Amino acid sequence: QVQLVESGGGLVQAGASLRLSCAVSGGTFRTYTMGWFRQAPGKEREFVASISRSGVSTYYLDSVKGRFTIARDNAKNTVDLQMNSLKPEDTAVYYCAGRSDMAPTRQTDGYNYWGQGTQVTVSS
Image 1 (cartoon, one colour):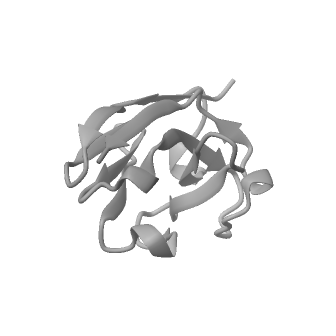
Image 2 (cartoon, helix red, strand yellow):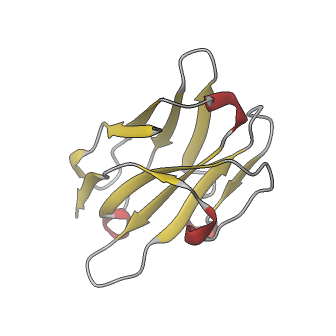
């Protein structure tokens, strides 16, 4: 059974940085396309970033481009999301997700595996 466990969330002030990490176990990590999603109160879960199996290709939500960076370590079975210049509108529960298909997607229902989420709160 594939398990994803996120860590690194917290409460920070606007302009600060946070690094989220997702540890994956129980599957073949290097064969998964990985992504990060977020869900703010009262809103639908939205795509934030994804990374290809090799780590060569990355994709981002327009509003986080230039501030967030997704990276993976296939030797450690981890995928990270470095978040810089955080804004109050980045406040949400952040979820790590994985999919067996190599084709990139921003659709929530395209991902097979999900973590439990980690809270990120950015104060103004």
